[in-house]
Amino acid sequence: MAAAAVDYGIDAPLVARGWFGRAAWSLGVGLAFWFMNRQEYPGPAGRMLAVLTLIALACAGIAWFKIHSSRDGKLRLREQLLDQLALKGDEKVLDIGCGRGLLAIGAAKRLKTGKVTGIDVWNPQDLSGNSADAAKENAKAEGVADRVRFESGDARKLVFPDNNFDAVISANALHTLADDGEREQALREGLRVLKPEGRLVIFDTAETGYYAEVLRAADAKDVTLSPWSFLWCQPSRSVTARK
Image (cartoon, rainbow, N blue to C red; front, top):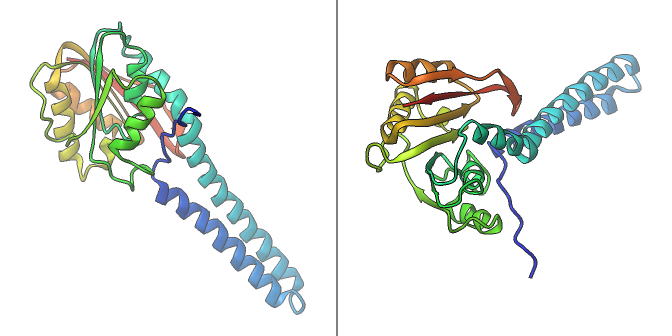
């Protein structure tokens, strides 16, 4: 029997689909305008078609890059983020907003006796096919099903006790919360469940400067912002800290 394929999904699938839709509409309007006016106004019709074709190509390029970021870019990103944790192999790790298990499974592959817990609200608008079952299938396919578990959980109100995890990680999750108040609550919850000297790594496409301010106000140590990168057609970076 063939091994199951690993699929970490497309982030914000409706957004990518929307850009493909804009490309199709732009090209369609351009062709219709050219067809209706090509004989009477060949010059303007041709120029309009050229402009709308360029717009269509730009929209399709954005959609392609968003999908590329989800398929390939975030796999490279995963290793960069996990490197910052410097895991020894026996840690307890929490992944907040785990989706289909990208970070949680990556962390589990670096552990020997440690365990990873991934939590999410499983919103399909955030990630295509987003579900605990999909994450479990990926963990099984990656050979780490015995070192990772997935469950429903609210980042704003974690059910875990204080000082419970050696590391807390999260990628592209906190910006989906309603406002800065909820994001602050989630960050403080992440610190609460960390053990003293535990390490926190948060990656996001927005609000990272605000995350750093919140962490410093909560007396986190060594709060550091990474250089900017460019994924999903948005400036992105990580913030790291210790409790």
